[in-house]
Image 1: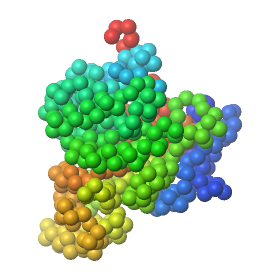
Image 2: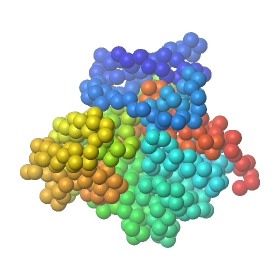
Image 3: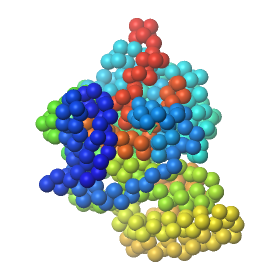
Image 4: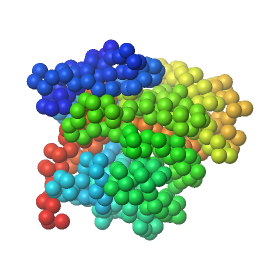
Length: 495
Ligand code: SF4
Ligand code: SF4
């Protein structure tokens, strides 16, 4: 059992919570508010996987020059404050809350809010500069979101600003409507420095769109993908919100669709739905879908081609950050997100077959080995360049032990790719790795019922706000969004 802090879903007060295994092998969260009583929910539906992931728990050092002083009032003191343990790995900037779709499951749009939130280009630039000035690691990636970011008339200018300010990675989270309508827009965005299109994509038939989005959006998703391809925007991540009874039977088909379109689709990020507003316990138990559920469904629906055991938590790759940091003597983002926030794996596609990277690389052994090398370099604080070369030499020699060439796909030199990423750590080497693989990720955003402040304090997906604050994604959407937006809102009638 683990004791943590959570929030009362009724009064939002911070309350103690217990996370424990029940008699059915599920992990549950239980909390009691003095006034509103007991709340219980499923936290992770598979205790064995929970324990496997827990082994990778790692606390990072956070941001060294926090924006807000400590006052013991987490999660109402964001931030980022000194208690936060992860730097900003991906920053979200909402550029508008207007949208050209009315989704029944959406939490952020102008029509339901009754006001327009649209930071000016100067405010956006200030947020971008603040993010790049973060220490010890400048924020490496920004996502423009909303609402629907492409309804901002100056979205290309906004993307260009992020490029000019030096962001290595820029993406937009979009429903794809505008991209489907204009290949020209895709080209302009690419020209301005857009790297990835984070495309809302709920399935490969019309059903999930009709239920979740209110209309059959599938044809326009396909058109958006085609237009990105034509524009040379060759990095699309499909983003299905996974809802029980709506699209949880399509996960395998979505993966096969991505594999077929791997020339431009480089990843899928499944997002189990989180609950907005009040929902009773029976309904929650019926609707709740957690990371292990998604992993097991993927295994079932791909006939075991991709298994739950192929996935690892986000902090699993920390040894890579440490190796690159030690080797280059400059800090590299640490993926010290809580181990129960997300899961991921990479797959190669060869002759229509999907081969998870874990099938031909002993990833656990390899990362342990990389970690040992990183620690070895770090101990020698003033390491000389020939010693670094020796470490790289060791890496090159040692890596073969962990790769089974007979099982590896033939089209790529896996060993070389790994060495480039580790030795170099640059965007180029990582890009080359991503060019040949399909990333499968899952992130389960929290709601007021399953929120765990230990996860929040380790969050690396943040929002930047016009008043210079940085707020973890899951508390922005549950606690802070309305207050921030109202502070900078314009009345809806003026638009
Ligand atoms: S969520 Fe993070 S930044 Fe916000 S108050 Fe808590 S520790 Fe500080
Ligand atoms: S956004 Fe939510 S689920 Fe993702 S890392 Fe942050 S706290 Fe965890």
